[in-house]
Image 1: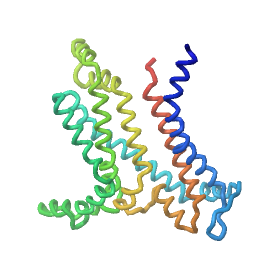
Image 2 (image 1 turned 135 degrees about the vertical axis):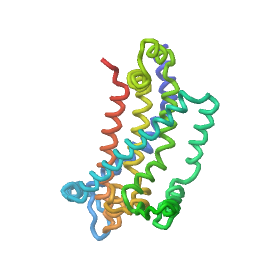
Image 3 (image 1 turned 30 degrees about the vertical axis):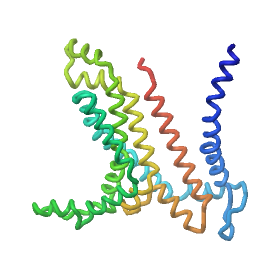
Image 4 (image 1 turned 180 degrees about the vertical axis):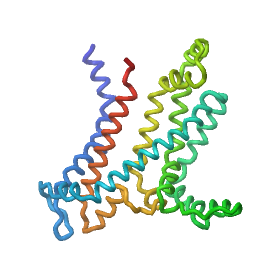
Length: 280
């Protein structure tokens, strides 16, 4: 009987296993393998040499791009999470169930539009002669340069990540046991203490997962740093494009991609461990 149950469970898991092997493990193994290839006369040739790794990992521009990408992703995660939390808290505790559902619906709507289109729309708003500078110019301020700066990049990241983070935080906060909150109030805890000792720990998993999604999306994004940030200094995603254009150096670009994947996996696993770690 136990063998039949195991076979039945494996049968339903088999399509997922095949999917992961074909579309994640397979491409990942191939990407790692081509990091050892060589480019001769603008053509890749099979080899097993460390030249591409040595070339990229000993160059200062790679580590500058790595540090800059890490900084932007971390900054985006902190800003997005801080902006999203008050909105998520209000949707979870201050409005009706119907209002919360409609709010989540409207937060999903932006994903129906291409992210590239939404990013380009910021050109009209953030340009030196755009909407924002025109408005503040009426009160004698500006114009300020926002495009081709870190500020422009972060605005693009917010456009990309903020709705998703609000949704994830709202779903997590809405499931916090109200009895625990009432018990905290009855025991004399104020709003701030209840928030920090009851609500946030109870919603920890959703809050961390929302932050991780924001970090992953920001870390690998190409559109915002390129079109709103001016691509200088380059992020790792931009460095990949520049490397492939330089003599068709796909193996070196693969080295950058593998480093990105490794970083994201470390961050993701560390966040999951932190999210599901039980308090002592």
